[in-house]
Length: 162
Image (cartoon, rainbow, N blue to C red; front, top):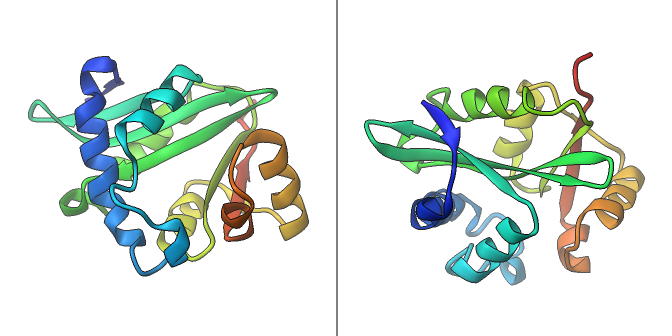
């Protein structure tokens, strides 16, 4: 079942994000890795800034999360993670399909350039990488991230269906 997350889901969201983000350790630049990958306070700030999470629930437990955030004239996909033991089982794709259906705005997602598995996931779901110049423009327009993260990231875009 896919449902919207509430404040009561904060600990489960953090658990999923931090468990799945272990895949980044040793892959993304060492100066961008930290533990926990997502602390509570930044998650709360992002939710207060409009990130709305959807969750894939199985047998009463959350096993995957994905956030959407409307920024200006686009929707950003934020923090898409599935528990390590349940990856590659269709959960991420199901969340993606459900959340994409919720918007008619252009969709953007940023991820680490070295996270090739994430890039492939988004490409399988209809997103395309933008040029490095377009990436910089989009990151500067729609995200607030450090320059180092900007330099080591990519952006993928998908136009909504009519």
